[in-house]
Image 1 (cartoon, rainbow, N blue to C red):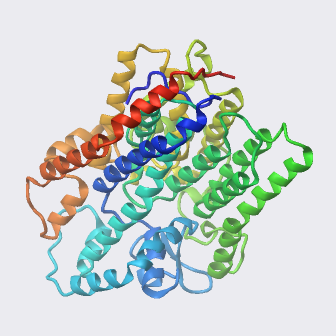
Image 2 (cartoon, one colour):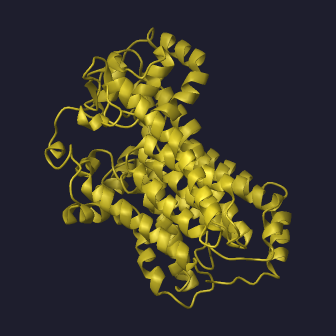
Image 3 (spheres, rainbow, N blue to C red):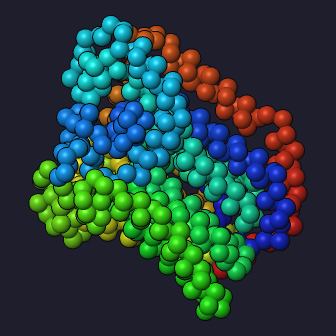
Length: 511
């Protein structure tokens, strides 16, 4: 995975050649690589978004009154019932595999409740030990695994694979396009965040893919279907979280700028198609809020019990605070640039001129607008101060755009320095995902104390399953063999040579 020589926005005569089966094969390799690593490093933690999904699978309702008291994020509704203090998009998505696998989950739950219940070990993990005392620990662990393997991992790995595909269409050599995508997927903090169900990362996946869908390396006329897909993804983002409003605004702005050369009537038609795509997500959110709380326009945070952040502004949403901007960037427990220092290179991108590959000016403006808007939104959201309990998450949607800008800037560095940065980023990202320790200062000591066992191994050991000290070595050896098979399987070398031949006649043009 080399940062040197990557690009993201060029017109190229070989586009049609590079978008054929070879590029698809490389994109699939990127997908399976990221999916496999995300799945192996899944974190066995149940979060608030799990409970409506579980309730849907168990009872066909998002009313989580059965689980009232399990977590402070569940509260009594004004008209009865109990609900989580967030939008339902991530929960609805997670409910899909749980509903499909409901017969299996039901049998596991029944079997689990018949097993002996181990005594509590340690003071951490109150929710986990609640599942143990209820005789449902394996059931909830299986749910945690499924929502990573079948929701978070494919969504985020799919984003990386689509990035690879779009870079290849722009004329980036396939090996480099795949390297850039894998570096994004495994060398940034999205790896840490993909460890369990998380609405912020789903917002980021949806927003970034929406921008990629609208982008065209040839800057050809924008097609209505792309505007519609972009709208659907933006609407899904707001269904997951109100920060999705940033996605809607920035994607709409990009759509408007991308269609500037088209006739006025066609331009407004594209905006209408985009708006129609946004509507399903917005309507679904309004329906949920009406059903749960009685008013379609009031968020769940309006009804949740008061906390320290809700005293500021409207239920915790206030003017952006400089102190919170600094904390979101540099706090060792959840800071964006602490979790992935290489992203700081993005700030050099506007000043690096003599590089072979550059993101076009219009797209650069959009990426910085996206970053600035999310930064201000999260600095206004006082709940960001709660991130020490969860680790970095609020600014995760900006990671892919900063990663692209950082790769552009890195071209100005010596090749060996680029390799050092890439390897160091991957090593830090993998270590943090393995430890799942929110404070970056404690990652290495945590891994050493655990014998490099990842959290799910610890949890299984806590309930008397697979308490084998060799399990980490066995797991990572098998993971290594699986990754080697993905990249060394027959046909890849031929595909690489074909791609290299196609790129031999390409002449990238920056703008």
